[in-house]
Amino acid sequence: MKPAINPPPSDETSHTNYLAACLFALEPSIENVLAAALKSGWKHDYVLMAIITIAMNNDRDGRLSSGLLHS
Image (tube, rainbow, N blue to C red; front, side):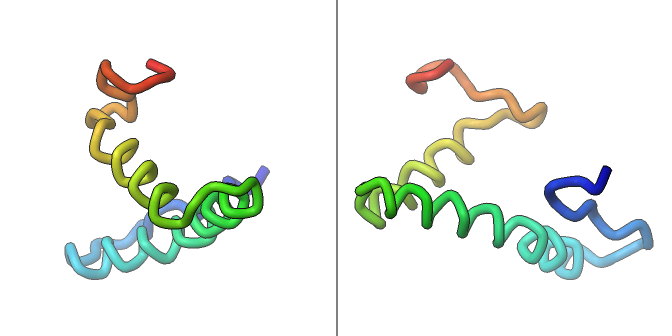
């Protein structure tokens, strides 16, 4: 089964190229979340702030730090 998000490049890449590949892989999923939230009636700026807050509160293992609502 194909992964929902493209995996990172397998070859040795520079930091800039790796980041660009990651942005390219994640962009459609984040745009879909944003579009779904806007369609549900959430305000654009608040959705972006929520996404940033969630991202900033993740540890290196992908777990949310304590303090967010669903933790």
